[in-house]
Image (cartoon, rainbow, N blue to C red; front, top):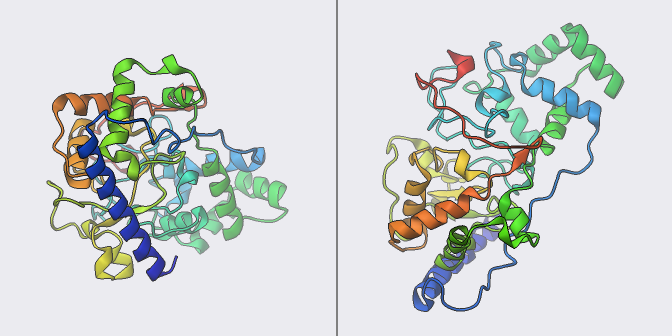
Amino acid sequence: MNCAFASSMKFICTAALALVAINAIADGVFGGDNQFSDQITPLQAPPPLDERKLALGAELFADPIMSGKGRLSCNSCHDLATSGTVNLKRTIGYNGAVHSFNAPTIFNVANNYRLGWRGNFTSLAAQNEQVLLDSNIMSNDWGSLLGRLKASSDYSKTFRLIYGEEPSKESVLDVLVTFQLSLATPNARFDRFLQGERDALSDSEKAGYELFQNIGCIACHQGSNIGGNLFQKFGVFEHPPGGDDANPGNLGRYTITHQDGDKQYFRVPSLRNVAVTGPYFHDGRADSLEEAVQVMAKTQVGQDISSEDIHAIVQFLDTLTGEYRGARLREAAVPADGVMPKDR
């Protein structure tokens, strides 16, 4: 995406968001017809994928062999047994530095048009490679990683069976991406509601959905991922409260583009499974979903909504929790000492 187009899209998105908020105020929360009913679509199951690559990708995802010091796996920050993330504001990396960004859930990652909080990756392969090589994340290099995989009789044999050769950078990234393409969480109650099961949501959850639409949340959170498909400024109407002023991550896309117009711009996160993926925002500054909703209402759509409306929206957001391998996602436990299990 070139800079001129990106700037135009940001202007259009911000203007549209403000217009939705103004119209909501003018019409009243429940005034008028439901004009946003087609803005969110049900999440589909992943496409057919090579079962051999899926199995190998899943094994590598959970194996500390992928990290330079053999202490962390991809699953350490993206726990597939719970919500695809960890219940920490920001994790601590290999070199002891606190990461600038909260670890987002990896579930439904294939539905995001850009990857990472700053949207700095356009493909899962590019993002996976950067994570593997980053000195404060997996702290690996291709020579060391491929050497370990080739030295493993099991991994070496499996790669030869699938690709006809020893592990390579391309084949390692291919199996990781293939596995991550499978990490969809369909069958949320809201999906069933969209597909015609009208009693899948309670009356209070439906009221929360109406508020979500008419207040203006849907201006940025739409599509099958209910977000993840555009950039937006964090703080359209006022500066967001909380956070660590010293965190360079607060600058958003500016840290990549160095364009002043990109300060505080982030990729809008998906709201899929949001009820179980706290803490919230790019730096984990909001501990609860209620707090996150209140902040978003004030800073993004310029409204100071009541506790009753916040509660209704939170109830609706809880219906966005889907299933992985037939089980509903659940929130990860908070580590007692604030450190990831594999990094103790």
